[in-house]
Amino acid sequence: MDWLTAPEYWWSRLLFQRGLAAVYLLAFLVAANQFRALLGEHGLTPVPRFLAHTPWRRAPSLFHLRYSDRLLTAVAWTGVAVSGALLIGLGDLAPLWTATVMWLLLWLLYLSIVNVGQVWYAFGWESLLLEAGFLAIFLGNARVGPPVVMLWLLRWLLFRVEFGAGLIKLRGDKCWRDLTCLNYHHETQPMPGPLSWWFHHLPRPLHRAEVAANHVTQLIVPFGLFLPQPVASVAAGLIIVTQLWLVASGNFSWLNWIAIVLAASVLDLSPLLGSGTATTGPGWHQVLVLAAAALVLALSYRPARNLLSKRQLMNAGFDPLRLVNTYGAFGRVTKVRHEIVIEGTDETDPGPQTLWREYGFKGKPGDPRRLPRQVAPYHLRLDWLMWFAAMSPPYAHPWVPALLGRLLTDDRTVLRLLRTNPFPDKPPTYVRALLYRYRFTTSAERRTTGAWWHRTLVGEYLPPVTLTHGVRSPHAP
Image 1 (cartoon, rainbow, N blue to C red):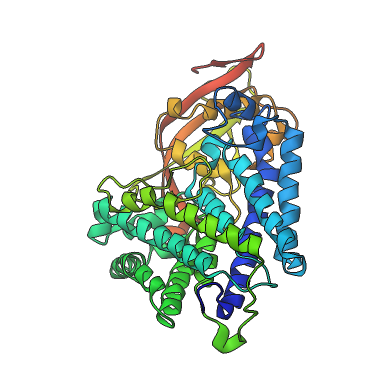
Image 2 (cartoon, rainbow, N blue to C red):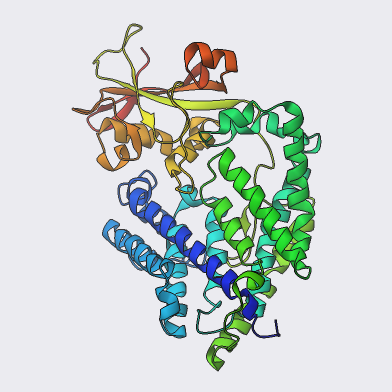
């Protein structure tokens, strides 16, 4: 490694870029499939309404010029096409300037989506994808050696992801300090996966060991990223193993996978695969690399200060372009799981004997006998927001009544976000939302009932509503 290029990281850069392109592809595919129902012209929280009172300087986006569902679809599928091209290696076959433009285009298009995405895009992994994507613009392609300064900035990003997550835990919930958080977390996490039931039923001492190992990986191991090889590769390998453990234990969108591809950029694979070219980029590319590095370092001051603050922010951005951010997850762990269950009926005058039929969601818990699904790294935005809504009153989430209204009008774009529609022929006359407490069944209950969950009705989340001349009105049976 010299001060300009690091040819021994040629394969590591390739792994990072291909992995990041795959995540980009998935993110744009999610937008193509879900954005219109959630944020489109007639979505639950329409983008035109948001843009009407949000200036460009607060949320830079191409959609400030004009928004339409058709334009969003074009942006999303363009992102799928460009990221797909980079994934299969076309960026390495193209001239350097072409590859640079391709990565820049992905970043601009996804920034435009995220900055108008409102609550549906308020997740740390959105900013993480954009920050990693910005650095990818300047990494070059197979025609040049990996720029040293960009490789160090990738390590700085991975350090902030891991160390920030570790600090927020120590400063947050007491259960992280007494090593008991995983007594609850596998059951109460936003979207459990198919193995979460087994993870939850691991012996308590093993849960404590999991938490302790997490603290080591997030609070000590990240410093190894800045040490000479092979220590840095060992640190990156430990992070990868930990992230794969998280992948197995639940659904966290593409958060774990970006951490894995960032860690891949640290691995020195040259003893096994050899080194790539040491050719430095042309003058214009070197100027761009140094300018971008200077910008990132300057913007790193506030995120670095945030890490040291007793009032550490979690998953926060400090600039509207989301160039350098702060990360963290599960500073507090919920001890009890609540779920919103939406039901409808086609009766015109609901009463105590009314038959209510339940809508099924693709990822979140519903039918107690249904094994939790593996959906990550794909991101089911509606399912995730339903988890947050269940922890607070309806007025905190105005999109929930809007969702019920769409079900009453048989909105096909919204219904495509669901797994099952109990009213395939015509919409229901009334819908309501109930709040249940969910817990994993015990091994004995599982053998007896075949159910993965046990649920208990807590009460009404939203009373029955109907459409009267196009206006929703509550109905108390």
